[in-house]
Image 1 (cartoon, helix red, strand yellow):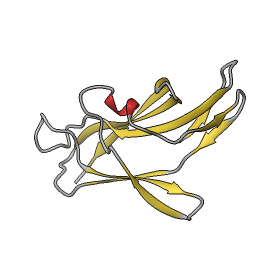
Image 2: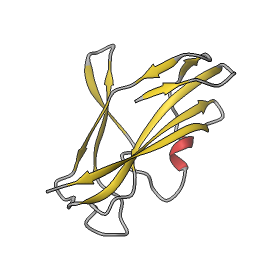
Image 3: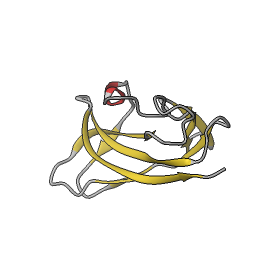
Amino acid sequence: MTLCNNSPVDYKSMAPEVLMGHCSCAPNPTTTPEGTLQLFDKASNSWKDISPFAAGLGMDFAGVPKVGQAFPKGTSLTFKYRVSLAATMTAGQGGIAAYAISLPQHNIAGSVTAPVAVVK
């Protein structure tokens, strides 16, 4: 995921947020998909589990404490994620949503959703 600050302003602190969206791959249509979401940590050269994995019914994830970094205008920040769905998931369609969260207000500065097809 690459965040690009093409705006005319500098952000003091920006944090990424990636979540699995609602998916027909969940075995029950009223539940969210289950799995593991990891972020690659360059400092330790290892994958770190992050949560939440999936979006719920609202925007509560935006208010969860996060660590951000300076994001001056004209710059970009790149993050590497990997997703593993639980074995209980079925074939279906869904999406992965990526957000740029401006801190400390926890405002969503931008977002994008990519489609996901789960096959078994």
